[in-house]
Length: 163
Image (cartoon, rainbow, N blue to C red; front, top):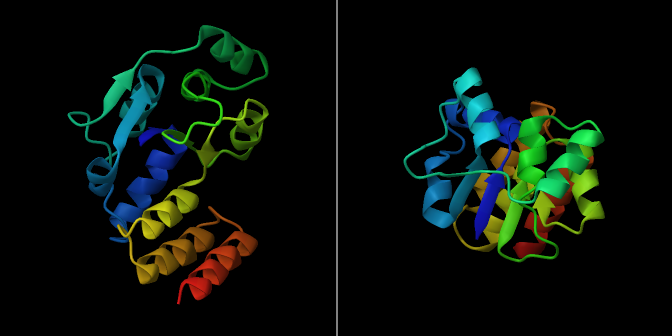
């Protein structure tokens, strides 16, 4: 699975790492982690601690038309570059973002995109994250206003169904 992770999500990973709730290094064990040059530039500016550049594929813009269209509707260069790597209905390429307008926009293209908490749920399904860890992550992400109470409740309900 290839993960294209945007700047805001990396900053969430930094916060979760500082709270010792999730070590972003695990992402490299479970998937191929990708960013674009534009995202890398922002991560350097924000001094992200979670990213391991030696294990991250840093790629150029893939689809120039999609990139230009995203710029035209108001997305910045970093978000547009991530969008340019989307693939319709792809089970192997996932865009990861916390940006609600970006999440909504990419669904128009039928790109596989999800929030970080949804990725954690995928990793729980795959046995990489325990149910208890997912519960703690969802609770903290709601406290940080990263996910809604409704989303947290959906995760809790999903966890109850697994028992």
